[in-house]
Amino acid sequence: MIEAHNLTKRYGETTAVNDLSFSVKPGIVTGFLGPNGSGKSTTMRLILGLDAPTSGDVTVNGKHYAEHSAPLHEVGALLEARSVHTGRSAYNHLLALAQTQGIPRSRVGELIELVGLESVAKKRAGQFSLGMGQRLGIAAALLGDPETVMLDEPVNGLDPDGIRWIRDLMKSLAAEGRTVFLSSHLMSEMALTADHLIVIGRGRLIADVSVDEFIRRHSRNIVLVRSPQAAELAELVASNDVRVEAVEPGLIEIEGLTAEQIGDEAAARGFVLHQLTAQQASLEEAFMSLTRDEVEYHATTTNDELKKEEALAA
Amino acid sequence: MNPANALPSVTPLPLRVPRIHTGRVTQMRVARSEWTKLRSIRSTRYTLLAGVGLTIVFAVVPALINASRWATMSAQDKAGFHALETSLIGVNFAQLALGVLGVLVISGEYSTGMIRSTFSAVPKRLPVLWAKAGVFGAVTLALTIPAMLIAFFSAQAILKGHMRNGHDISLSISDPGVARAVMGGALYLTIAGLFGLGLGAILRNTAAGISAFAGVLFVLPPLMNVLPTTWNDAVSPYLPSKAGQAILQIGSPAHTLGQWTGLALFAGYAAAALAIAAILLKRRDV
Image (cartoon, rainbow over all chains, first blue to last red; front, side, top):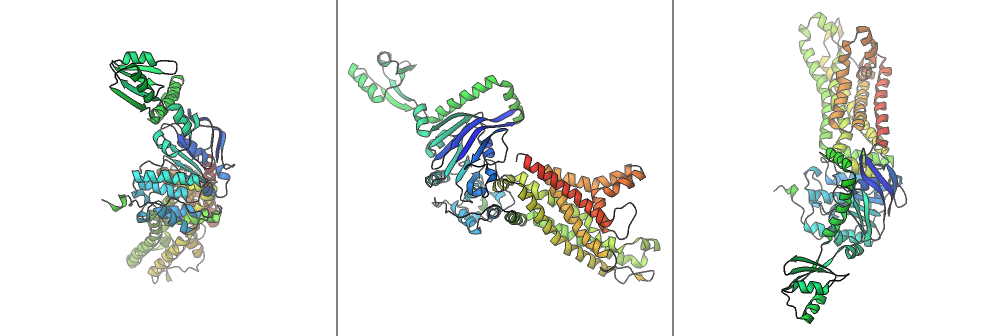
């Protein structure tokens, strides 16, 4: 259980996280979604106490992370930025972390096996590929048998098998009753893994909804119709609930009716149909338009701030 | 293809994370973790070895040169020769190696990002600094004591039998002040390493930490020569390296602090650096 109350983090003039309140519940996979630079990683650092909030508060299982006596048993985290000494072997990296709280040595071997790094466990982590580094980070996150698992962009650099494995692993961890908090900038990834979504843009909360609800709310059902009598058909079906848009002569987009309804309607009037295609606007598009609004709103209101950020980033 | 870069074959991985009972973070456990960290980096082992090697090499080589040329040396050169100084000269070289290592013990974690893992495991942070200081200090002392003893005894063995005014020029460990100087050399090196650790923790950057360490220990003392002599004599004894190296002296040379007073002051500088580091460590974002 992670609870954030009015969490705000400023770096100089830049506000990375802005009055963010949310809670992440156990037993489900919660996706933390936002475009790159929207404050996801900062929020995760605030949860771990690596950065102190400018104002507001965030607790894990009722306490600040630093107040827990066995922190790795409370939260296992994979941060986006690499957090491994390049000169140390994967085995020794995990061993050193384990030893801080009396986690037995046998656990290290168990996890190396779990993430499939047996063959390279004695090699220096600096030689690891991105995908191997991710696996090592995931092993470190699971080391303390954590109640809460928090992973920042975990599928980065993983091959398709690895991605599928991570998805299944996250689901099974949630099924065991753990809190699973997973960030991504890809809606499609979240739709496959998460049960609940926390969407942020520019450090602000945009949505806190279940994935089903998000999909229902944001995916539009559009039917593409090609017909010599497209104009007549458009006139016939258009109503308050049905939106019709002419794409080109003889081709219209109808939103609000199913393909079957349109086909029946056309048949009843004896209209000729050359094409009748049901299309679903992708979740990615819905997510993009949702966060784009937020970005644009801020870009127009705080143009100076944005310029400063760009200057900082450059 | 480099086998290290090949992804391990993807066998169907287990999905259940076995449950375990974990303990709590204690200072001792963090120290054990820091010991694992220290011994598992190759460059650390080399630098420690270099520190130890330099103390010995720079005792043996000058002793060999002086011993071989003793018969032909002028009376003035003979009069100016110090058997103790010769065998402790390596301290000057070793302090650089150990100071750099002290900086690296913490700055290496910042440059690689390891510090995020470290402070996620020990979010109270200070136990990490104390553990690093304790483990690195203990390891340095455990290595420099034998190194200093080997340096001293080998140099004296080489010098033995060479006479000046009817006396053997070599010293015995039981001569007045000698044991203190030899053991003091090990203490000096350990404190120098901890001073480096403190600077590394304050500056969080390898290059900056090493520069600061070398600046304070090597650049500052000769810089004092631009001051009027009376000022120089008044200030210089209190500089970290000058104060600390008082322990290597026998007797009481002019413009030098007492042996233990000087070493205590040097330790004070190192402690101050670590204290500032501790305050900053608690307050700064990682």
